[in-house]
Length: 583
Ligand code: AMP
Image (tube, rainbow, N blue to C red):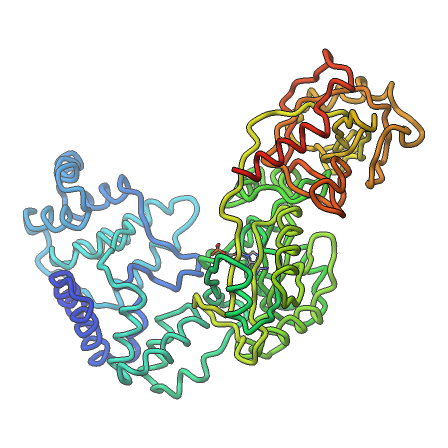
């Protein structure tokens, strides 16, 4: 197929703003094309060479492209740069440069779709030493043979700026129109959602028609588009929508991960289908240990945890782990993560997308032996508003964003790529911030792990209850200590060490080491929440819980000027909690 035919279609698409017209133009092209070309047409039109989850990406740096154009056209880099500064678009610049250049070849080889596609793929795949030169040479070669208006699109795609405005939905509509009817677009969409590959869907549709799509199933190694949730503001609306009963799960605040597991290896993909595998070798190792079947696709949320307290950390911490090529080992130690699995989409040869949630959850339990690093999402079947509110509170205490309600009906399939009411999220929109620091007393400590091996990993901190003259715990403090502080902690604290818990300390937690309440540290937290494991103001807000400071951080200030009984009191913490709730 001459590349020119594709370019004509691009020009027609660019000249319309009507999506309907765009759909028809693309449908006509697809219908009249050889099935062998359909895949490549679809990829190129969307500015890609392969589906999103594959590694080959275009997006040549502007500087490199500019040199390539100079090489292909014989025009100086400085005059191209001038034009570039004026035009801003590599496509237009390329077209103009090639229009104005003197003819240097008498016999250019007309471009075909295949030649353009294959060359671009080689450009995307070139790696290692000498790869820049190679990319330039390959690209210059096709630019050289291209007519100016053809080169315009080659320039755009090579620099990652195709932007024809042909969204996936338009391609889906065009495919239905070209090879079936408009009404069949749902079947096309489903095929796309389970394969994430419109090129493949197009080719199958062209060769085998709609029946062909039926055999497109979920495949291990080929991420499917994530199922998404709707939102409702209250438990009663959620329960009503769910028919009075649903599976409620903690809504973890992390990074969504789709894990594809086979005996050969494990691949991890993000919600946007990016390959995350290299950045999370620890998750891969942990999954390998926890997985007891042959092959599967499981889904979960990857959450950063404090290595010393085991508590969940704010989502931002996981960002230290993403896209990191250097210092990965250190980052893994410093920012460990835990995976909470909540779905199983495929197991040992069986596509489970059309199975109800209860079966998928059972499959998950069948193939995973939970470990410290791989756990199942906290889940409960609930049917009353009170139960949901309680569970919601527990979720917030645990450091989650809220709850996910999931339908348990017969129709509770895994709807890849769709946002619907089979899953409903219930989030606390408003979280007040603690803007005052508190001064807490160290009453215990926990042994360090990882980088903190041989040191204190976290301290058990307490408020002072002046009514009972007791020290009541409010958090485990593991953040905010720099290396120097960690090194001096034993010196400061060891002289207060006790063989057992001090009589004035109220704790429901068993510390590794106990201290006489003596040392006061200044702490800043994100907010105050109720907690069944801490004893500060126990029973005052809720019968079976105390108050806890979430995401506590040492400010660096040892309040040696304060006696332990001058520390923040339980009564003050309660006031802070109440004024926070009022807000
Ligand atoms: P949102 O990003 O607010 O639309 O919420 C949807 C996201 O919540 C999903 O994409 C997941 O990354 C995340 N999530 C956390 N916990 C769960 C869970 N138990 N089930 C499903 N999704 C969850």
